[in-house]
Length: 464
Image (cartoon, rainbow, N blue to C red; front, side, top):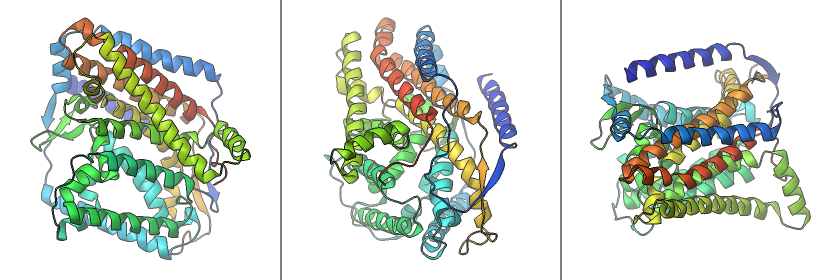
C-alpha cells in the first residue's frame, strides 16, 4: 500500500512539473557569464516567508513527535524491494564508455571550441549537464557516478601501489578539497573561460590519478576524493540505493539516511556540514547584501582574494559550530551517557536531505534556462551556434515559489529522518523527543538562511 501510494503521488508530481515546463519560452542571447544573475526577488515580504518557512519546520517537528510507535518507524524506513537491472554488465560498460567520451569532449571542446561561455559545449556540459543536471539525478534517482566516473575508470586499468591510507587523515582531505573546489569556482572565471576550466580538469585528473596510484582506486575514491564523496552522500537521499551486501534496493526517498553507520567519525560529520554550507555560500555571494558587505570590506583595504576564502572558512565554522552546539544541547536535554561526538554522527545524515533540497532549488532553474543553449551548440561543438545566437530558456515568475518549496521539502524530510534516528538511538520516547530540540532549532536556522538566499535576486559576485 505504501509503495502504490508513493508511486501514484510521484507520477502526479512529475506530470505537474512537466506540464509547467512546457510553457517555458526562449530568448536569444549572444553570450554572457554562466554565473550571471537573472532571478528576481519574490513579491511577498521577506519577514513573512521566513517566519512561514521556520514555522513550517517547527510544526513538522511537533507533528513528527506524535509518531512514537517504534515498529511503524522501523517498518517505514525498512521498506524496500530488490531492483532488478537487466543487462547490468552491458549498462556498466556503456556507462564507463559514456564517462570517458564525456571527459574527452569536455577537454577537447574546452581547448579547441569557441571562447564565448554560452557557445562552448564543453563548458555547458560541465556546469549545466554535470554539476546541475547529473547531480540532481544522484539524489532524485540514484548515484551512478561510480560507473560514470572517468577518472576511476582510467585508474582501474592502471597499476597501483595499494599502500594503506593513513587512518588519522580520514575524510579531512575531502573536506578541504570540497571547500577548495567551491572557492575556486567562485573566485575564478571557471564558469566563463573554457580554456581555464579544461586546464583545471587536467590538474584535478593529475592529482586524482596520482592518489589512486599510491593508495589504490578503492581507498582513494571512497575516502579522499571530494567529488565521489559528494555523490555518494547525495545518493543516500535517493530511492535507489545499495545495501550493505551491495544489492540495489528501491526504498522510500531518504530512508537510507537512517542507517546507523552512514556517517562514522567527526571527519565525516565535518564533510556533511561542508556540503550544506558550500551550496549556501555559492548562493550567498550572488546576493545584493553580499555586494554591499563585500564593497565595504574591500574599501577597508582587504583584497577580494583574501575576503572570499575568509568568508568561506568563517561561514563554514559558523555552520559547524552551530551543529556541534546542537549536539551538545541534545546530550544535555536527553540526559544521556552517549557522547556529543556520537550524537553529532547520528544526526548528521538528515542534513544531507537539506543539502539536496537546497541544491535542487539552486540549480533546477539554472538547468532549465541553460539546457536549450547546450542543445543548440551540440550539433557544431567546435564552432558554437550556427546562427550566432544562443537560446536561453525564459523561466516563468512562479518558478520562484517552486524553488522555495524544494528548500522546505528538504528540511521536512530532514526533520523526519532525525526523528527516526532519535528513536533508533534512544530507548525512551521522551528522551528521543528531547534530543531533537536543539537540532530542530539549527534546522530552522538553516531553513531561514536558505529561504532568504533563494528569494533574493541574483547578481554577479563583485570584484571577481
